[in-house]
Length: 331
Image 1 (cartoon, rainbow, N blue to C red):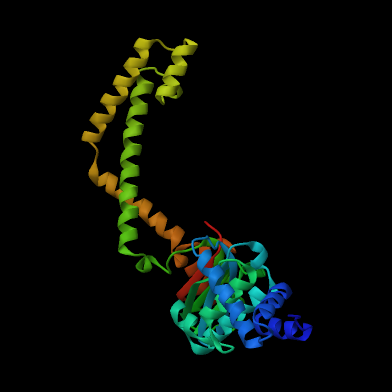
Image 2: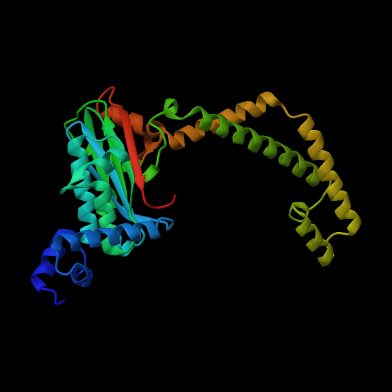
């Protein structure tokens, strides 16, 4: 049957689907607008199911503050082309606005919200049908506090941060500075107390192992130097073979190097000072905390001071109580 252009416009307004999709749906539904809407939506469900195993690595990340409540939302898709599409960005914004009004606390709560008569989950599926790409609500992060600051890096909707200060300050740039610090330095916790015990234990274990290996390596290098061997040639089997081929060492010398390295390493490992190892490892752990704990990090705007020192200069006792960060990019 012939499809009326006015009906196509109506269907497009209701679903956001393309002209061709609207025309085909109306033709299949024999002009029944409600049936055509359902067909468009079923197409979205089919596409979403078919592409469920695809990776959604692009998307739109937005942040919003409303009083003492703030949230970051990440709506993902497959390509940058769709991520920059005005309708896709508008959908992400509409979802975030509704979630902030409802004071949602999780992705599941956001998905269950009603938006223009349909759940958010259904609206995302509908949009998937329109674009032909997998879409998913990947994150919804909440921060509540006395004084909130938000930051959307370069306003390109790929990296957003949200920070809560312990009290309100007259200068709004203070909160923004800290939000930008979080974006730039990617801390994992406010301070050492916020780092999980599992992470602490793992970092200490790595630090201990690294320190042990370094102490053994130093002893081996000292022994090689004392014996008059070239450290580059003695570094590996590849370098030993290279040295033999070039005539820099003999087969007998290569074997002597191997024996010296093995003997020295075994002796050093058996006589390592465990107290010293632990002290060096703890120093490395403290360095790790300075790199990943927000308050201990170098302040990006003045590297002569820490973030904690900067905040205390702004107002005595001022600190960060919480923060969230989300990025689409692998780091």
